[in-house]
Length: 279
Image (cartoon, rainbow, N blue to C red; front, side, top):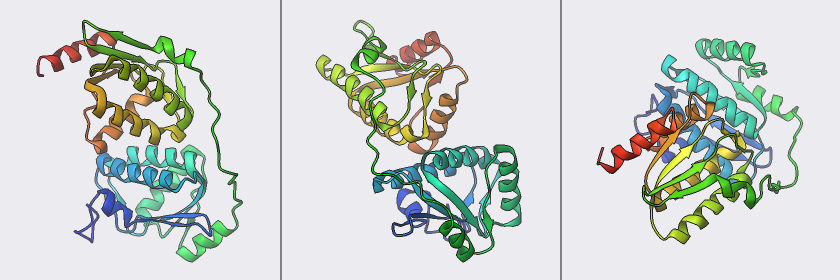
C-alpha cells in the first residue's frame, strides 16, 4: 500500500494514478512521491504496470521523469527495485531524470550509479528536471517493425508431445527472445500445434540459458499467461541458477502464479507427477 494515502494500493488502478504520459514532450512521468516499497512483491506489481502502460501507448521510447520525494524503498525491496528499474530503462528510456530524492534514497541511487555506470540525473525540483529533459536528444524513430529472427524450422525441434504422460515439452534452452516478434512467432507456433491435438497438457519448459531481453518481457509474460489459461493442466519449468529464473520468480510474485521452477528435468518431471496426484 502507498503510504500517506490508504485508499491507494499496488493494484493496476492504484498504480495508474502515479503514471502519466506527455506526448508533446515525449515524457513518461512516474510519481513515486511518498510511495513505500516494502518488499519485492510491491516492486514487481508496480513495474509490471509500468511495462503494460508503456506497451499500451504503442511507442517504446520515452524520457522518464521520476519524482522520488519521500519515497521509501526497504532493504527487502532494493534488489528487485534496482533490477526491474534497470530493465525498463534499457528497454524504453531515452533518458531518465529524477528529482526531490530524499537523502536516503539519493544515497542509494548514487551508489547504484557508481556501480552500474549510469548518470543518476538528480535534481532538486520538477522544473529543473524537466529543463534537463529538454536538453536531451530524442532517439525516437519511425514505428519499429521487428524483422523475424527465427523461422518455423527453428521451432520444430523445440516442441515435443509425450502422449502417454500428457506432457508437452517446450525447449527454450540457449534461445534468445530479442523482442515481441520473436515471442509471437514462437507462441503462434506452440498454439498451432496444441490446437491440432484438441486437448490440454502438462507443460514442461526448459529455461536453461534462455535469454528474454527487456523488449520482449511484456509480450512474453502475456502470451505465456494466456497459453497457460487456455491449454495447461499444470506448468513446471527447469533452469539452474539462470537470470531468467530470477525474473520468473520475481514476476510470479505480482502475477499470482506458482513459478514451479526446478533445477533439472528429472526434478521437473517429478513435480508434474505430484501435480497429477493432486499435490
